[in-house]
Every structure is written in C-alpha cells, then in structure tokens.
Amino acid sequence: MRLYSTNNKDKFVSLKEAVMKGLPEDNGLFMPEDIPQLPKEFIQNLTDYSFEEIAYNVCSSLFKGVIPEDILRTICSETVNFPAPIVKLDDNRYVLELFHGPSLAFKDFGARFMARLMGYFNQGNDKELVVLVATSGDTGGAVAAGFYKTPGTKVVILYPSGKVSHLQEKQLTTLGHNITALEVDGTFDDCQALVKKAFLDKELNDSIRLTSANSINIARLIPQSFYYFEAFKQLPKEVREGGEVVFCIPSGNFGNLTAGLLAKKMGLPVHKFIAATNSNDIVPAYLDSGEYKPRPSVRTISNAMDVGNPSNFARMQDLYGFTWNNLKDDVVGFAYNDAETELGMKEILEKYSYIMDPHGAVGYNAVKEYESKLERNPTSIILETAHPSKFLPDVVRVLGQEPHIPKRLAELSDKKKEAHFVGISFDPFKNWLLKHY
Image (tube, rainbow, N blue to C red; front, side, top):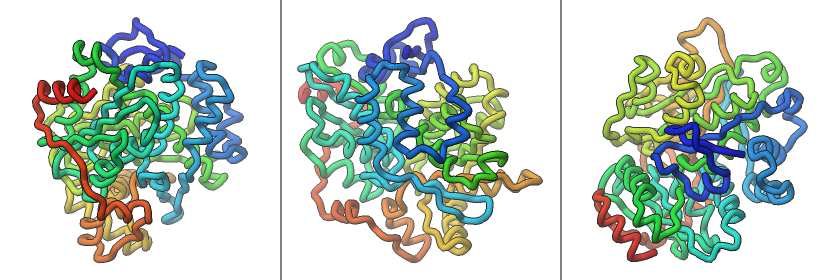
C-alpha cells in the first residue's frame, strides 16, 4: 500500500510512514494511492460475516499484505470487540449507535485500531513516540482510552478550555500515566492549528518522534469505514438488495463522513450522504455555493462539531477530483442552531421514546429536511456518535429527564482533573514539548 499527500500526488510513502508521521511535510493529508473495489459477493453476503471479519476484509483489501494476516486479524479482534447496533425508529429511519466502546463515542473504533497499528510499527524502536491530538470533545477521550499504558508511547491531548462537557473533560484529564492534557485558552481550531504547526516544525521533529491521533491520521480514518458496512448488514434484506440507503453524519472535522465516502468508493451501495452540522456550517455552505469559506468556530451544545475549518475537507475533495459537482452528487448538507437542535431532541423523545444526544439530534433534523424535499422515503441511518450521558447537563435541561449513565463514565465524575493551561501561541507550546519530551 502506498499513500500520497492531497497536496502532492507524485510523492508516495509507505503505510508505516503515513501512520507514524501522521501529516505530510507539505501540510496535506495522506490518501491511499488505490482504493480497491471489494468483491460484489462480499457486499451481497455481509450477513455471513461478523463485525470483526468485515473489519479484516476491508483493511486487508486496502493494506495489500503490508501487515501479516495473523497480526492484522489480531488487531481487528482486539479493536472491533464491541457492537455497533442499528435501532429502528420507524419503517424508514434507523439510528446507528456508535457509543458502546470504552469512551462511549464513535472514535473508539479509530483510536483503538490506530493504537494497535502504531504499536506494531513501533516495534524495535527505542525512541519514545509522542502522540499529539486536538479534540473538540470525543476524540481526546477515545485516544486516551486507546493508548492508555501503551509501551513506548506518550499522549498529549489539547482541548479548548470551557468548550467540552464536564464528563468529556474528565475522560481527558484523569487517567494520568502516559496521558497528559493541555487545556488551551482558545477554540478547537486553535488546538488543531497548534498540532499541525508542530508537525511542520523541524526542530521539534528532529528532537521528538511526533505523530497524530486526530482523523488527519489515515490510521484513524480507515477503521471508521468498518461500521458503515456493519450498519448496512443489519438492514432488512429487501432494503439491502434494492433499497435507497442514506447515511446521515453529524459532522465537525468530517473524518467520519470521509470514512463513509471511502466505504462507498470500495463498493458499499450508499445512495447519499447527509452532512449535518450545527451553526458551524462551512461544508453545507460549500455544497450550496461551491465556495469554501472557513471561519472561526462558534460554541454550540453539540460541541464536538464546533469546527470552523474541517481538516478532512481536503480528503473529501480529493476523493471527488476536487470537483464541486461530483462531490455534491453524493453529499448534501444541512445546518441547525441550538434552538433547532433542542426541538429535535424533544421530538425524538416524544415520538420514539428515544433519548438522543445533541449531535444525533442535528442528524435527525437533517434527515427530516432531506426527506421533505423528496417524493419518496429512503431508508435513513442516523449516526449517534456519542452516548447522551456525556452531555448530561444539556440533555437533562432540554428533556427534563436523565439518561442512564454507564458505570465507566459515572466513576469519573469525582476524580481529580489534571491539566496544564496553555495559550494559543505556538512558541510556548513548542517549548513545553521540548522541555517535557
């Protein structure tokens, strides 16, 4: 398997280099040179495969023998070992629950897979690996859980002060050991900018072995494609064999949606993807106008999507030849403010007796609006990306009732927060890294 940068398709690197480096030197993003088509028989017979077997077949096709079969099977068995069930709301709408992993968020799939992959590639290297990750909420918790106590690895998580939920923050700041949290006096975009600049700084990279755990790392992106196949597998037979299937993805940095597009390119018969955002509507606005205009993010109750310049937009463009018309053939976008999100949360509870977190509610609103523009009813799958208890104050305030809090999350509430407070200037951040690693 070879990969190129979205900024330079003529220079290739190995999977190991792409995973361990995270970001190309030209500030692009790594993409596979070839996206293979999975056999039609595999797609038609998905119900014959376990979730773990689906994961193995997808990444085996992409990796092309770079990782020995037995090791790749072990990686899949150790990472895809919790379910991603679809829950039926009505005859046409389903919810894909992606919160059954250790950190109760969809990013557990990518973070755990990446940790194992890095562990394999890091064998025999005595120099410590420092993983940098910016988070708007859920990425940090998933990466912390995925890399916790991984030998030879230290993790530095940057998160925006006051802009993640209480329990999300506890997931980032209470583990200790090889996990360090930096509380940044800024937005997620500021956190992401610091991480990207670190990878392009020669002095830092000469002194420290740096890599990324954000969805800018291809090792995070690929495993997120697995659950699109798993969700499709669970649909009724008549839908799988001739229905119009739509995936609706609450989106911030757009790694999740890009993974879905990758699944489609590999042969999954998806009719349309819906990019659902909060007030940070940069991509829906692009899909409407053809003009990409990033701007500073604004704070919302769906904080994991508070991104003003989504990194994976470059990968979305690359998959469609940087052609607006091609991309908007497969992707439509809708955006909602907090008031509309809260109305969606209430309607889901009243209509379906289902408690959905603010991010999922944004997706629900988008499905409704998309369906209203059609004369038919497609089968829609809304990605519920995190457990509603992670956003407890807003869920209780809006719905008037408290969702069940899983034990592994409830136990964090009284643990002591440990974080280093930093500003948004790069040089102090750089000096902190040099001092500590």
